[in-house]
Image 1 (tube, rainbow, N blue to C red):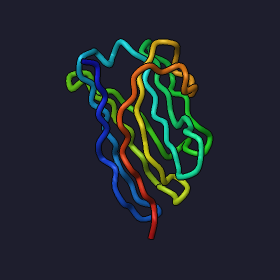
Image 2: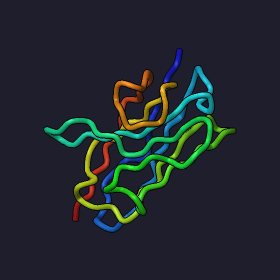
Image 3: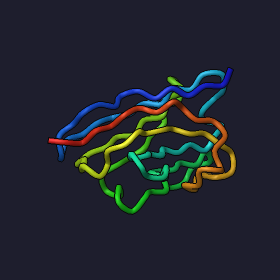
Length: 123
């Protein structure tokens, strides 16, 4: 069974940091493009960052450039999203996704999704 499981969300103050994890089972994450999306209450799900399985620079949403980074941990079959200098507008449920159509931040390009983890940025 192919599965993605996110973890690491929580409540953090503005300016703080969080690291989200996305662990894959049933398939090798290195063979897939991966992306992180987020969804705030009442809003559409939006792409945050995408990473190709063939190398190249990540694709970032403009609002997270310079604050968020993504990395793969090959041995753990896991992808991490490091989020620094968090802002209240970063609040939402964060999802990781895997696909093979490229790392663009297009929701329909991804076939496998995790259940999401809540990130709340508030003082």
